Image (tube, rainbow, N blue to C red; front, side, top):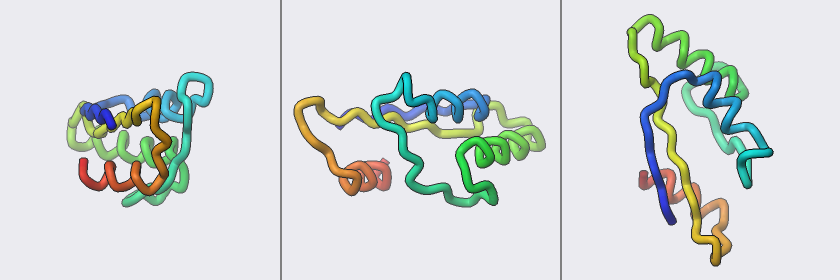
Length: 85
């Protein structure tokens, strides 16, 4: 499994990109932790607001996971990879 992590800013654009089903093969928000919002856009708005108070520009960590094309990878295997990252 190939995993690539990046620090990111501009959470609202990132949320729109991540939830775009036309550009992504599979879109699923499995869990949001530490936010009062119940959706990705709201959670990233919260993170954006906090970043403005701290002057942090890259306040998010984005992890892209690309399983091998020849294998079926279960949700539990992807969650294990996320926990290890």
